[in-house]
Amino acid sequence: MISLSTHVLDTARGAPAAHVAITLANAAGTQLFAGATDADGRCKAFPGLDPGRYRLTFTVGSYFTGQGAMLTDPPFLDVIVIDFGLSGADGHYHVPLLVSPYGYSTYRGS
Image (cartoon, rainbow, N blue to C red; front, side, top):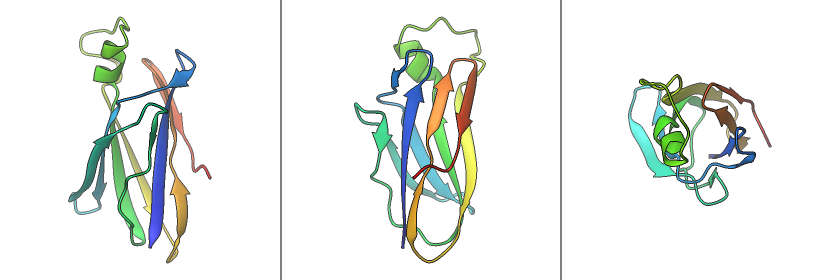
């Protein structure tokens, strides 16, 4: 099985983004996980995964509103979707999200 983790960093505040809602779904759209980042902006509670295509969805608009950020209506970034693939029979994948109200980046971490 493949393990997966993520963390969300609020680059506007220079701090971990706690309580960001996250879902994980497979290529067929079946939801495999729903939860939120912890106080350190991390989420490690994903189930073991097989090789294949997956989708992480981060609900950042409500996070920024909760932080007191002045957002447009509708927010420029409300929900961020990252589609990615896992290969190999085992190993670990880390998918971080660096986000501000007007931009984000991601990469395969370690």
